[in-house]
Image (cartoon, rainbow, N blue to C red):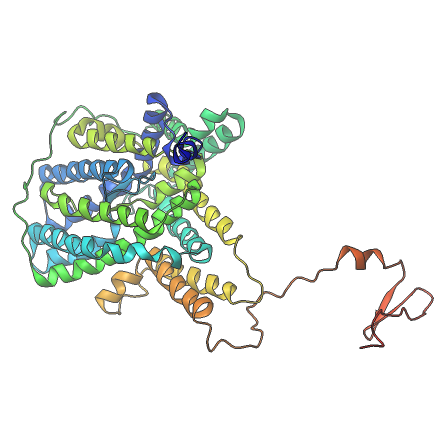
Length: 492
């Protein structure tokens, strides 16, 4: 019998390749969609408002983004040769490009200028993706743990915003009613996680959203009256917003966004690989980056924008323990259905943001906890790893706690460092190289940031000690004050 065949037959299957069946895939897939739905529609809403679009075009822009998010998710999870990491990563429109796209609108580029800049910069991103795929050795647990922790912590304000009502201009924003609704969703997650069986515990996020929405409806805080209004079926029309227009300045500014997306996607791919417990090498990372860039090239043809992995769904993988990429592939199918069936999108849109906020607190906190767990594996003895973690996490949280911190910096710099995820990744990589790879010039004196080595005694030495033994000036005395001789001391 062929030895290779025998080895292959006994090879351990990858956790992400488990197929849970139609029912579970649909349920868990819907859970992923509900988690990221608010995020994926926020970008087209912001761009449409900045462009002054009528309601009809705004609706088409949203459905285009949902449709392309589904296509990109299928490409990332199922994959084709050279494209797709085959990991449970939900794809959608990246927030990283919002400021740049609004800037292009304000400088007269219009929607066609945005679409052209996205397409051209994504082509450049596709060309340089192989370079980024070689960075896996620069993402040890030290760097990866910092990034995962900041991903979770940077999303906590999103959960708080949702819990307060999701609309800062609304009269009831931050009201006790909204926060109480978030509390109901949060308590539901905790109760189902504690009392439910394995299946219910894994579906606790979805069930909490459903129960929270029903409670909101009883309290008059969920409005389903608009579900039947509008078209039930509509395929996104290619080039509805016109042919892309290519402007050098717009392309250059969007290329900075592409670099940020490549860094963030690298971090997300490695993070979800760590959570799932599967190996991610440079080839697999490169396939994931190329899938992002290919999706971003195609997206403008349907009126959508840059595509990247959604960090909040990385948290959902961590909190539920459902590692199957086929579950996320079903999320892609649901997103496509939402893109061609606007009525389904209107149903999902009825979920109150406060309910999502309660569930999001658990989700995003779990991401941070996963990062802390990864950092617990790092060796802090007689090295500078503690200061690397401190500086990287601190740099990543600056834009979270002080959003205008980089307002006076050059646009290219602000674009990169305004993302806490990319800021953490870049700082952690540089400091890890500086202290752990390029050791020449490192001080031989102990830094205050170096964790002191733990003191240990061998079992043999411990067994030779008696009650009452004391050490004075480096010498051992018994309980009667007699000096205990040290073997080999005279010879020394």
